[in-house]
Each structure stands twice: as structure tokens, then as C-alpha cells.
Image 1 (cartoon, protein in one colour):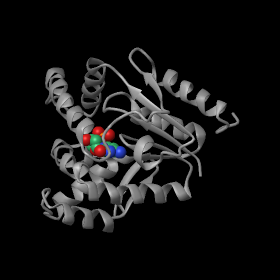
Image 2: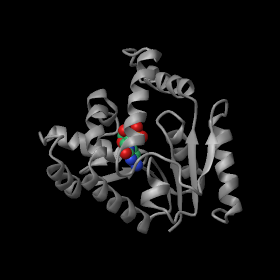
Image 3: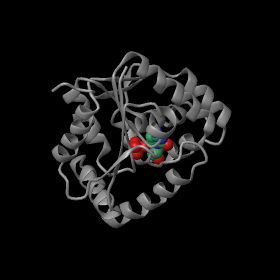
Image 4: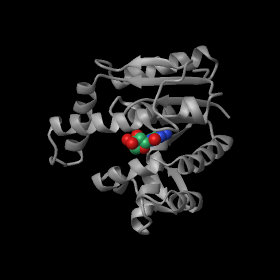
Length: 221
Ligand code: DC
């Protein structure tokens, strides 16, 4: 099946772009951040210690994650909203840092790619999981633009608990964690096309990626 990878930091517009791109292409959108979040949520629900890498990997191997009509399902249950709460975001860090959890997630992600054409978003999709992908894109943006986007997303959800400054601070810490993890660190693949999204609309970004996809023969329209 065909694969387009969209990697990059939180707040660069990956999710919206991946969603719209997948819908325009009629492909499946795989949100791999949501997969790590789902493992973290499952660990919290089952009281699995976030420090016990082996137990986390065993848990990751036995849960079922599905993407259905824009929803994320964990063992058949809709967890789309719950995985975005701060407690789950914090728990996702040790989960995503654990190499053996990443191995399980990589296997699950590659299995999805056997069944569906994928627009996959994450941190390591072009580098580790799908180095053979037909098109690799890395979306980036300035820290302030990313924090502003995150802030706006929270306001839309009715969450006014954080200032832009607080988001900038936690974003910086998360970037450090994402860039420095020993396995699956966030980086652009050598052959990725880097798009700086500051000042670009969602349509601009998606049209740019669609143009690239067309040039590579991934779409006829
Ligand atoms: O994209 P996101 O914010 O939902 O990702 C949640 C966390 O999971 C984030 O800290 C980065 C991590 N992640 C990862 O390590 N590898 C991926 N492919 C996707 C996300």
C-alpha cells in the first residue's frame, strides 16, 4: 500500500493537515501520537507502572487500537477526548520513551500499512517506521506559532486553564524530550520535504503536499 509520512513537532499543524489530506486522497489517517496516548491511558486505567517498561510493552502488545470515522478506539471504546487531557499527555512521555513500547507500536503501525493507504503522522514515521514511504514531509513552525495554535485548540475545547506562556514552557520541555529520546527521536528524514507552516493556511499546506504527491504519482486528481 502507499504511504505519506507527516512528522514534526506538536503544534506545527500535522493533525489537521494529515486529516484533510487523508480525506482528500480517500486514504486512512493514522495518528501515531494518539497510539502512544492510548497506551498511556490503558496503563493509567490498569494501574500499570509507567516505570515498568516490560509491563508497558506487554500492555501495548495486547490492546487493540483502531481509527474509525475520525475517532480513536481502544479495545472498541471511543477514547478520542480522554487521551488529550493533561494527565494522559504527561503519562505519554515515559510510554513513548520506552524502546520496547516503540517496537510494539512500530509493528502495529506497519500492520496498518499492509491493509490501508496511509497518511501517517508522528515523530519517527519517515525515519524509523516507514523509511521506504513514497513521500515524507516534515512540518515545522516557530515556537510562538505552535504555542498559539495549541492555545487556540484548547480554547475551542473550552479549556481556559493555561496561558500561552505556560504552553510555550511545556512545549519546550516536550520538544527536548521528543528530540532526545534514544529510539524514535523526532527528526526529519534525510529525504523529507520540510515545510515551514508559519503564515500558511491549512489549505496551503495540504495543497503543497498534494502537489508533491501528484508529482510522485501517488494521486491522479
Ligand atoms: O503528537 P502527539 O502530541 O499526540 O504525541 C504524543 C506524544 O507521543 C509526544 O510526546 C510525542 C510522542 N510520539 C512519539 O514519540 N512518536 C510518534 N510517532 C508520535 C508521538
